[in-house]
Length: 254
Length: 200
Image 1 (cartoon, rainbow over the protein chains, first blue to last red):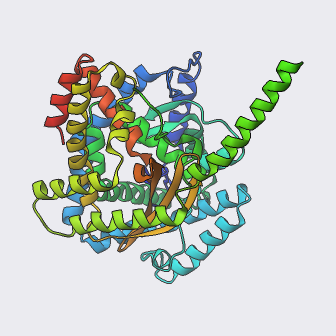
Image 2: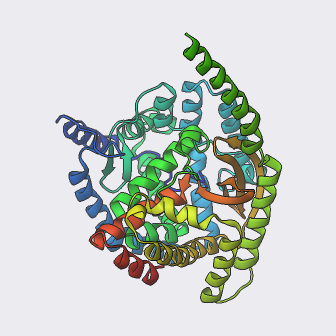
Image 3: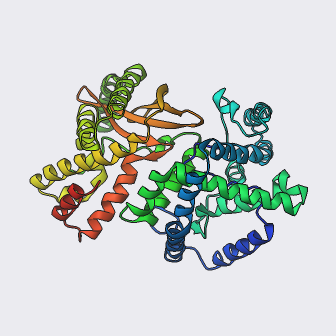
């Protein structure tokens, strides 16, 4: 299990880079026209983002949701957990790189400690969490935040869901800097991609109520997903709720 | 000159008065008190989810817990925002009642997901409007997650205002949701109230 974050930070272990170059090109293209900030959120391409959202929702309804249900039905819970643990374990390599890039000694120590402890089970168990060693989930989007890069534009990515310019850039860089991908083996990359998909299916099932509430039981699922993603992401980056984002109990509307 | 001097003197008298009074108002709620409140509140929530009652009875119990700890009027007002002002007193009353029921059902459902977990208050910090209490929810075999509770005091009464599950604010989320409901009701509060009563 790689993290408590509800919308898990994008972690992938070896999807073919070529696909992502295409994605990157598309993202870069869509960022060419002049962005205009509107409302509370920096979401100037809301109309086209809503189309992607509709696609993602359709995909979840027809394929991803049912597959997740099927996956946990035919797979023993212990195996589902092992797969999730192993995906998190493999991701620790990239995580350690980001800890270093962020000059986060404590985070780096945690990551190394998690790796060492969980190696006792070949990454299949998560003794580290049981022992109270936190998973810092460092990613390159966060590294960019530490480097004072602005959040940029909110958007949805086909199949992957909500993101921002900074997080999308982080997502691509994470793939490139992940030591696992440097092994340059198609077999490992394919296995990594499979593992990533299974991990996401496990999450979709574990947090099914959350997904269903967000996608199917909210008045405006696009706005809800945006609200949730940005709040949760800011909470992660800020390591807690930022004081100036707190609601004011004394605000009066009388 | 004289006038400006008077103003300065008057100003400093007011300022010193304010300084003398404000801290006692602002710091009346201590971190320990806030932690205690949240400890009691989470114990009550867990008593409800572990009671094994059918959902309808559970949501009624949640409603009681909400009434006991939460600043339900302030929460309802904050969620509705400016449209609150244009509502008549009877609409405001009906809206609070409907919103409270909706909230009990919705968060009751959400908290039911916490069955089998363990919650512990870990720390508290002072914020402008009161105290933010941090608690950690632990599930067997999966990563823990953080729930933060905003507690404030008004007229000597200490109450919970907002709660943040992994950073996601209940009030912000509901403002979005209720705002969308109001839009779909053509901005009519009465229709919104009907909608709230039928939701969750």
